[in-house]
Length: 374
Ligand SMILES: *Cc1c(COP(=O)(O)O)cnc(C)c1O
Image (cartoon, rainbow, N blue to C red; front, side, top):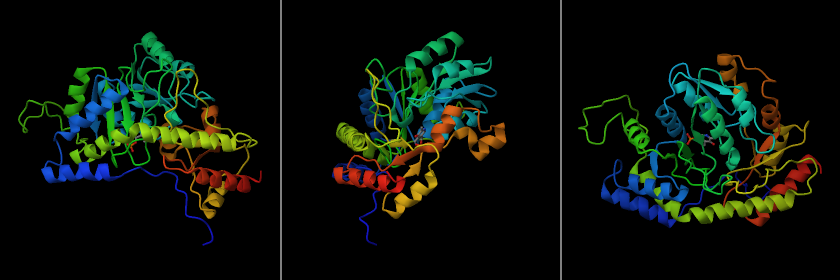
């Protein structure tokens, strides 16, 4: 068709090691509830500096169990970011709690702690900051808000593996339940999957039981002492995860390298806003490369024209409160969270993955210049 091969939005790194470890699981005959689960959990917990970790079937499942673990239930309010993947708000609804949104910080694009505090009511039970696009939320401020109002914290780190907080420590090791996701576009993949890192052994016991139909570890399979789910991660998936842990530092470094190639190539691109840089100990775990187009540009047109030129891109992310389900259910309307809405209208994710070559980055930037006429 006259163009080079399509440059995809995302592309996982998988190889012989994954195949070998999965093959061993297949040969063992134990495809679930086997030894690969605790093996993967231990490796992951150690990487983020958390005492405990529980593997689950998705990031969404992890967020759901984490909210239950901190006691969110009927009629509670959970304050969270409107600029996120919809799962971080939906999980409150699973427990008949209400997701309450507050606006974001215009630089980091994370939930603004002051706006979150202003949204606290007597029904607020928890705050659920999202480390959006891999940039760490201001956890010291959220912890202060939580302490002032007696709230629990659950962190959505589904986009933030490899990020560090202001104190330089890895995201996931702060003691609050912190949830990671392993869908195929994330920094580490198991196909589908997730992990909750924890500071409390009691919470791990509860989550391990609830992911497995409410069974206690020492009970016969017929006795279930609480409501549970099937949110297990299989040994097949955990084997992929173990292999991915071996490559993790390399994959994270490759993502960071792709990000600096983009930054160099886009530095003098008039009107385009780039992801904020690291500040002090706050370091991004690179997940996506999202730019904000100049106001007034037809973003859907840009996406279409880039695709015609062999480049995938995606509006990323839409504001959750303006999705039709949230509008209808809660009566949200435009204008409630102006910073989020402005960002959501203009943001565009460009192709971004560890194996991206310098020439691919250049092709994306060249075509973006053509399409935007600069
Ligand atoms: C990916 C993601 C999730 C969870 O996704 P799953 O597909 O359920 O693993 C949750 N929150 C955010 C912000 C995400 O990007």
